[in-house]
Length: 392
Image (cartoon, rainbow, N blue to C red; front, top):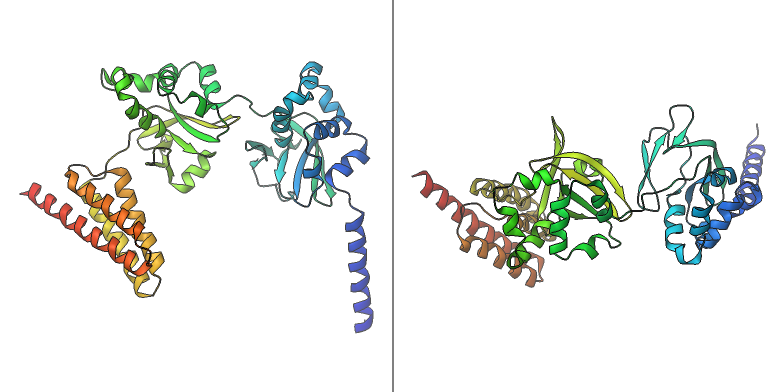
């Protein structure tokens, strides 16, 4: 084949590909032309999502047919389409949408996918019939100019109860709910979030030393109660697999939670997770069998952490990456501040706090690294002296 003929075929192929792309309709246009998604299109218009699904961003839509909508209670559907329920309707519709263009082939090995709503969709694309949640996928991979449509036979309904409502409905979080009420956190946990709550059961609170709960619920201990409750809440939706991969999560109190897998399953600090990934409209709940309390670092842990940070920071600093060295040093000092140090005097924590504050006020990264390093050295020597005195 001559070079000219080959170039001619390539050019013709590119033109044909361009024409086919131009012929593709947007997600909304495709649904309208199909004639099988009239209710869905009506709902998309009522929710004000036409512009979004006609735009340049790519989406994957699990599209319920008119027959799927016919399964929904007509009164419920009519209520959703009312203007005053627009927010609720958007929550339902965006639960059918995944960001990006995801074909059936792309999703074959996936067990779940994040919806635009925020809640996860469960996928089963290896068995027959193909399923998303409890809906069957009847047609896959309808290509659109800005995404792909998969047709489903059932409307997908997200959990529309808040984290707090879910806890009330469960019936085994009476003490937690009482504490939330006394701490005036109801509005927060009924708000938009999203939040991830590690929720101790009534049995978990009952296992605390006698009198602890009564003392926490006293008005004069409200600040302490708020800090304790915030320690059980992490910003965002942190699903179990995400938590294990990260290993740690920063709570609203500022303290970190240690997360991992044990023989008993998912574990946060020393508590077992009894139930995980309970969806809510504004977040997630993981049920735990213990009330979580921030654990202080031992002097030996402090010394080990400082040693490790210095081993990392020195070669980075010597290579000229002073800001990166600052980040390493600041991270270890912040972790020590959040955790606290067991069996050390108040002057040690004051040293940590003053070092961090002085570093924040030092704008030159070279000088800031030295501020942090001097504070770390002083803290290390204090921990070492106290450990030696105890050993004697």
